[in-house]
Length: 563
Image (cartoon, rainbow, N blue to C red; front, side, top):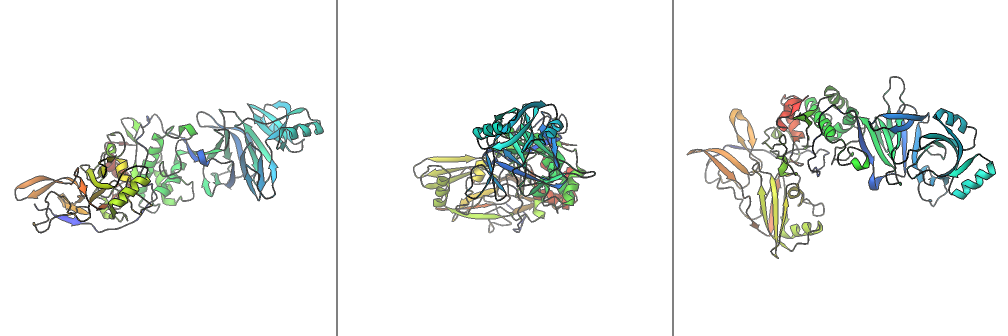
């Protein structure tokens, strides 16, 4: 058989996207109306904070209140302070400009969680704040829907009682509920405001912008648009959530998921994909923590406005309000760095079949350098045994590997046989990641790879180039030249139509499903990511070829509506 081929040279470049999107496909939400405010968790769970600082970057001061069930901010109070710190309402300790929830070894000042609360309740913050000025250490507090004046902060109830008696005030010694948050001027023990909305309402903080300004706020080294919520979900540390307009959020995603200097149409495609992914993820896997998406790559990388660039912001602005839908629902717009020659059907990587996430050969990526065009690692059987055991599988010594590939040439499953006769099978995403090991310095960067014995011939069903003297041993990196001179990657495996002396025939380039017994294996592949949905490097290539963002999205997402 004769096949006209072109071999693509290796080239390289990495993008800040998680190797694999580990979450299974989620049911996409109905596109009843474009979302406005989204909730992005910044610190939660084991990373929740005992204290959290804010500093105005653009703007001056803050409004305090809460976000209602419609994600709208309800204002209760305000301050002109530009640097504030939210503390969980425990006894906290200030030392060296930092706040601690246990006594530090160096000298410290205490911000106690016990206070004197005067008996008069007020309807407004302004009334309570005015009254608080008459008392040493006085501040306004919002407790259970009413405003009060509190005075002092004490490390114990007895201390609060003693000072109440000494001062002769008309009030009670008290501490608020486990959900209470105290706001202080950063670097001091001065309490500005205290909020206890119980279990149902958490403190919200919105920066105050000047005339013609759009507020931005420093938090943990990053600048953010929007406001912040501080929830003590477990009655202990603060879960910090950024409440932000969806397009302002996408402006903080785009430069971290795609190079902001890439062509505008590629950036637009990424903006629509990221916006749609966000809309489809509202009230998703992080719902129990009170937010929609996290800032890490397994959701979408988000780092506020630090990386924003003129071109990436323009891409968001010029696609404002544009989403991808399928049959009236927001699409699950998965994307990855590079597909190495072919994307993959969603059900062959994640859990369920989704009609618009269909795999296809990608003729565009070959026109750009991805830095993951080609990669290869040699694994001894001992290496594979060690990797499996490090990952918690109590296998014996591995003696054989059986790969199964999809029709598009991506890995579908890997079965390892040990010397005890026990098989260990990993499918879909797990097949792509099981051999990834930082300990051994060997990596499967995508779902697109093949495995063969190091000293064995690859089984390619007797496919030759031009003559029997040129048998193909490894088809990864090979391209077939089709109609109009378009080069399509063969990609290593699958079924192909070729022109032979007998006419057009379908051949299978495989080795799929055959056990390979060897002491050493070569794993060769291309691409970076999970191979589902849009290739970012493919989008770059298409944009450089003159395609618009809608063309790009329609290529990678089958049958979606864009608008």
